Structure formats: structure tokens, C-alpha cells
Image 1 (cartoon, rainbow, N blue to C red):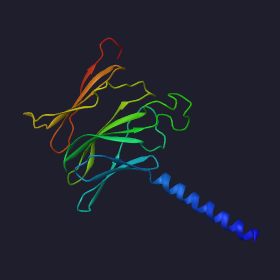
Image 2 (image 1 turned 120 degrees about the vertical axis):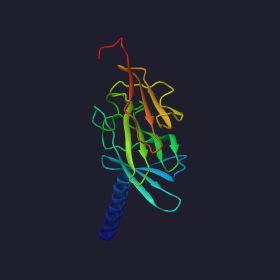
Image 3 (image 1 turned 45 degrees about the horizontal axis):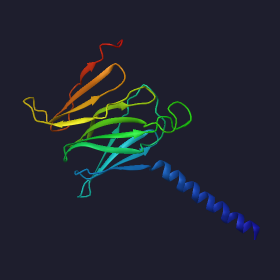
Image 4 (image 1 turned 120 degrees about the horizontal axis):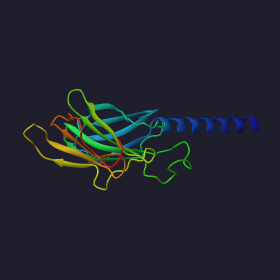
Length: 199
């Protein structure tokens, strides 16, 4: 009887471990209010993938990069926000990760806002990321203004459909402006540096 009870206990522990492992590998977060379809961020180890499921049932998957001078952990983003969208052409959104998931009592502590990135993803025939930039980081002392990121939808004579402005409170960079075309391609940034700080 005891061996049967032990076997059931081991089986239950095994199912719990499999479920926990599956939950870790399939962490997801939904980007709300996307008109192009259901937009979900899925974490696969160190890789974050944007998956967009259209209403017709087709699915697009785009691997996202997260460039930073500080090595990221394997944690999944805990929030994401839509900034701008041209339906079925491009998405602009942010995703945020815990700054120090391995040691929440270490640098930045448990209550910091996290490491926040901004992305532009083109949704054409071959969907791909056209911009990924770190815009908020406790670890690197990078702090955006309350208005950042700012999207200004405005067509211009150069063919751009809008501009994305990142403004900062700290660091040598005060402002970076990116121009986005109708297909989601992004220009090189126009940057304004703080002349009072060493470069």
C-alpha cells in the first residue's frame, strides 16, 4: 500500500514538474488593441518572438532583438504596449523585462520599472523587425521622459508616414527621432546630444 502511495506521489510530482517546465518555456503576453490580428509575445529561452495571428487564421512569427550593453537574463517580458500601428503594414510597441531577475535584492531592487525596449516590426510579405532600441534602463541609468515614446503620424514629402521620438532625462542622449515609412522601414536616428555632458 505504501509503495502504491509513493508511486502516485512520484507521478503527481512528475506531472507538476512537467507543467511548470512547460509554463516556463511558453510564457506569453498579449499586446492589446492590435488591429492586424492577435499579437502575442512568446519567450523561448533567451529569445522573444512576436506572433501575429490574423483573423483568417494565418500566423506570422518574428524574432525580436534586445540590444543592450547589459546582458539580459532569460526572463520573459512582463508587459507590452502598442504605440502605433498601420494595420497589416507595421507595428510599433514596447516590451519590458525585469532588470535583475536573478537577484531582485541586488542593483535596482525589486521595484524598478525594468528594462524597456521599443520595436518597429514590418508586417509585409517577409515580416521582420526594423527597429529595436533600449529606451528605459535602471541598470544603465537610462531614463525616458514622461512623453517618451511619442508617435506623430504625419505624411511628409520624403514618403514617411510618421515619426517616433524617444526623449531622455538622463545620459548624454537627449532625443532620438526615427522616421517610419508606410511599410515599416525606419530611418537612421536624428540624435540630439546633451552638450553639457562629456561624450
